[in-house]
Image (tube, rainbow, N blue to C red; front, top):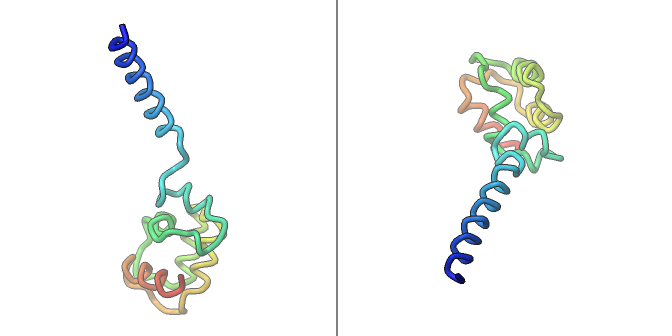
Length: 103
């Protein structure tokens, strides 16, 4: 009888843990993470890059801002781009490097 309860209770515990994991907010790096970032310091590089997906390069700083706004980027993303140097970015890798410089 005890073994049956332990077995059954263990299965229920696994279901609870699984359900909790599915209900958690978006994991680090998703668009929700960027939207939840209260400041530039909390913004991750991967969350930042998601708002620039589909960007055509080369691109200016102003092009990056316009594209991010079209993708409904939160203020933290726009603030980071505004700190970028005024130059032509040749690729997403260039943008990532500049993101690291200003962070």
